[in-house]
Structure formats: C-alpha cells, structure tokens
Length: 122
Image (cartoon, rainbow, N blue to C red; front, top):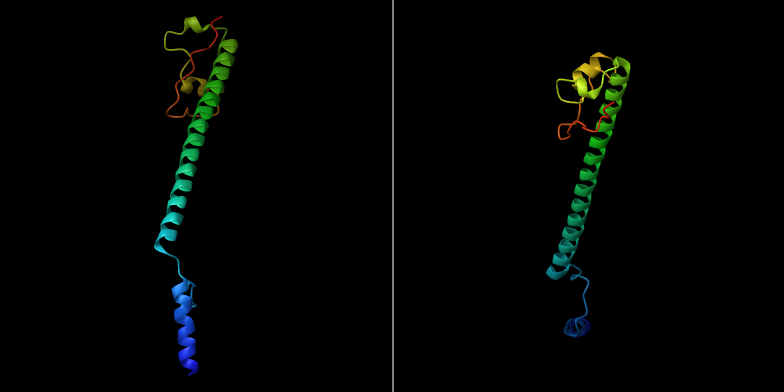
C-alpha cells in the first residue's frame, strides 16, 4: 500500500511540472542560449583584439619612422650635408645609417611601414 501512495505522489508532482530527482538536466533551449551568449562574447573579444592589433601596428610604424628621422637628422648634422644633396631617395638608406653608427646594427623597419619623408631640408 505504501508503494501505491508513493507512486501516486510522484505522478501528481509530475503532472504539476515539478522536477523529480532523476530529471535535473539542462533543456536544449538552455544549452542553445548559453552557446549563443558565448558566441556573442567571443565575437566582441575578437573585434577588440583586432582593433588593438591595428593600433599597435600604427604605433610601431610611428616609432620606427621617428627613429629613422632622428638618425637621418644626426647624419645630416654630422656630415654637414643637406637633404637636397642626396642623389638617392631621402632619407638615406637604413644600411648607410647603420654603417655610420646612427642606427643600431640589425635595425629593421617593420615591413608594412614606409620610410619617413618629413626630414627637414636645411
């Protein structure tokens, strides 16, 4: 008789929508919502990282151009030459700046940066 009462109570709880001990899993909708939220957050993070990477590249180019400009100005001041006297492109090649100890040996401009063209002509 006790068994019948217990089964009747379980059936009544199931009809009311109460969760039994064996039915504690996630529903498909809950899992899909969690996956969608994680996807949205991942998209935001990837977009933010791409923006920071572009800013870092621009900053590295500006720093490299400043370095080459300063080395060129030191080269021009030391040799007494003017930018107008160069037959090649201004500023002088990075190799010649390294040979005169105006740039550290092994210095290389980043591949996606242009050489500066704002060297003052004296």
